[in-house]
Image 1 (spheres, rainbow, N blue to C red):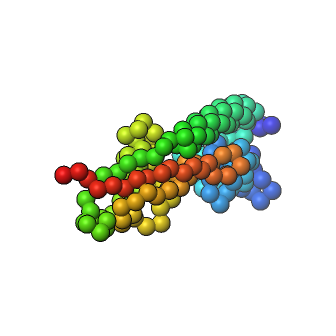
Image 2 (image 1 turned 90 degrees about the horizontal axis):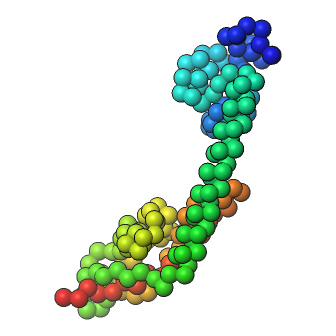
Image 3 (image 1 turned 90 degrees about the vertical axis):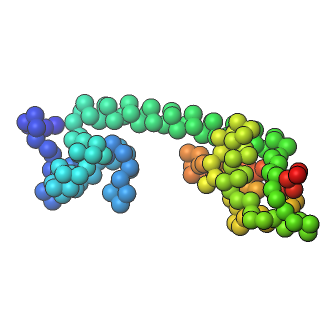
Length: 170
């Protein structure tokens, strides 16, 4: 494939050909052979480990790496699906807050408070996973949607949790 050991293959426009080792925005996906300007390849892509020279050895290593990444992603998706099932079976979480006699809260209950209550039940839910348009401002029972992540087809893995907001006992 290459005549000399350190020679980089060039495309039809004189640019260097590289294999991407990870997704690069506006350039290509992992495993793509792309043609870039020599300076961009030498000074940015290769030093940051985002691309490599397309030798037979590097292509084999990249194939093995892609298999490991896909297996890790499949395992993560299975974990997220199991978490979604656990959350859907959960009766709900209770959050105690201070409120006046009419049931209006002093402040509001938002995603961080709900996330903390779920983590208290050993469910690893971050506040950015919760789909809550505005904070909860009154005592009551609410159903809050969660988007835990995406599957291989970029379809969201969703669940719902019931949140009971009650007055704190004095």
